[in-house]
Image (tube, rainbow, N blue to C red; front, top):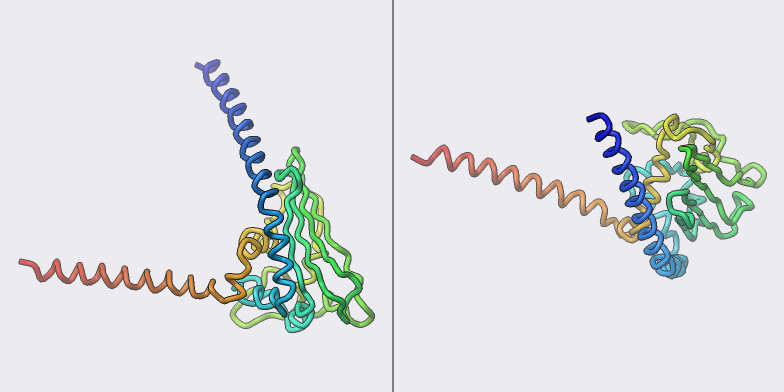
Length: 225
């Protein structure tokens, strides 16, 4: 029995590895198809004033990370790009593009996440070249009433400097990167138009209606002979 179990485990491992490889191939193929669409979308968004500032502020979690000073800088934020590496399992990068502004010299700020087959993760970020007297990333910590910020620093821009190399099991998930990559990036127009709040309200309303219906059904059953 032990030999059968060992053989089964080995076969399943091979099948799972092959399946993972096939999934990666499909994901890579469709990433290549979507890429020109995203680039065209970015070109259109660049013509809309303060698009990304509005989108970030409308996101319940990301908006809470922006200080007043960050919001002023985000007025110069013209393009967001999230790009998987050619081998999608090896990592991805998130790039913010800014028009010339009075805060820093950089036009692009990038944070990249690289994953090795051995389970290590390497996170790198742009070292921002702040203009004299404009470095808000090292400001005093601020707390908002009733809300806990995921990051201790006053400024969102501290996120770019939070880098390290370590075993994936020993680090926490980068929640900001996940929200940008999986939530904001696929459909930023939803947040720009404040449709995300409407969706949440609709779900809450549906839940209330369902509960009311259940109560009515219960009342009707009590009245039946």
